[in-house]
Image 1: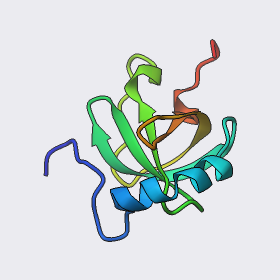
Image 2: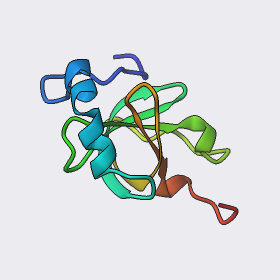
Image 3: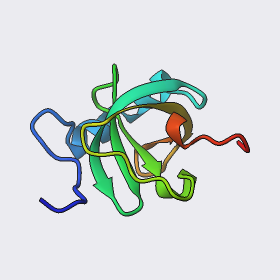
Image 4: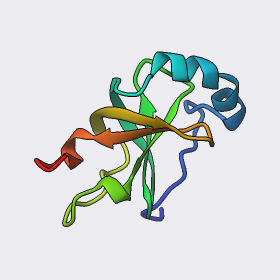
Length: 104
């Protein structure tokens, strides 16, 4: 398997489910909400996360928020972070705790 993978699988929401539940997702996860989740996909630009307790939501932690010298979390890794934006393409943007620095 390639190091980078799109989030796919029978237990992951499909695009229609993510889009159809977007209003509920935004209501359940306002900006500033603490989340926990699991890495379900890796790309050169960041990691996709399944958010615990919100089954039809997909989060993205972008590499632009990752400190220099760190590596992307592995598939299946458990993560914690905070919602900082709701994207036009139905993704919850998160900043991971492990990526926080004293400057933020």
